Image (cartoon, rainbow, N blue to C red):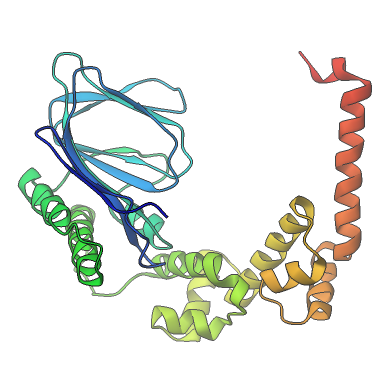
Length: 306
């Protein structure tokens, strides 16, 4: 693991290489910069990054598509694994601040800040002074101590809460009841399942994590997805197992344990019930299909080219 790095200069202030302190949401880096004219950034990241443009202007391009102009008062998002290019204007280069973060609640948080579907650029509903107050407090907590870990994440969460408040207020037609709706609970439950399905969790564990009853959680899944929580959990585990069978050389016993089945026999029965074929035969069938495709490409390469 790289050591925490703190940089403080006239045009660039940044705190990076932070350790991930929570599975829920964890700050990875934060900073602010007055960019040079035509300064370009092109890098695929493994974390979420939210930029706030404080002054000037620039552009944002996703997956080599058209360049979208971004100006002061806007914010733009980078998702993990996305190929993004963004850069400062040649005559009015932007100054921006940013936070990089990860965790099982990250996707829910950005949606509740307004980044729905393919949306990557939004007006920033929070005053720049408020944004910089949160970012500066994060950057002031530059020690690698548990206390500073808590302070950094507290200011990050404060910033998220301000963004959520403004978004929800502008899209609310009824008074706030103080509780999540069924969709939010399903999103949180799905994120929990993604990260903990290999630990043998049960529906009661998921409901307990969310602080609601098993019956209400099941009602939420039936309403939003049309299936029970239990069925979703089983389907998720079995599809994950199918991917592992096709893409790894792990033993069936190892894969069974990796997706949360303590008993390999129960896993094999559930897998066959779902896919109509045993895990062993599924792997052999997939391997045979891949071998056949590779052989066809080798013997008839012209059939696979324009």
